[in-house]
Image (cartoon, rainbow, N blue to C red; front, side):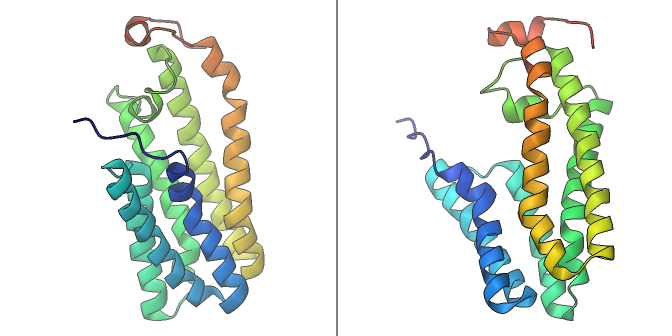
Length: 196
């Protein structure tokens, strides 16, 4: 018997729920408490995803591993440097994974997004490259913010800036995605549109 589709609210909860509770905990009790809450919330939503969807998506899984390591170091050493470096590491890992996939001829955004959006191979390569560059830029921006600004500014940037910039960048990719759209999934794999 096939598993029922997961509820529509699950993905937004997995993606943004831990950040929301992190912000609330930071406002109420400061960065150390918020870090502990972030770790707990991250693993709680992954467990919920496993129960309701039968799987854990790889991007939140990578994020959870980094949250566990860097959040754990923050609490253990009582040093907020580690939690502030966490977005740099996550964004840098995403960039490296996408570039590594391109290096071996496998645009890794295709298995992540290909079930909902069909593009030719050239489109997947270009989209993966653009996101790899974007994630590298976000890693550098996080480093600049946490090293030069107050903790309050960094928390605001982490919760609202990274999400907002990612949303804007994603929306800006619509012309590329439309230009390389393939209506048929088999066409998506077979078409060879020149890169542009």
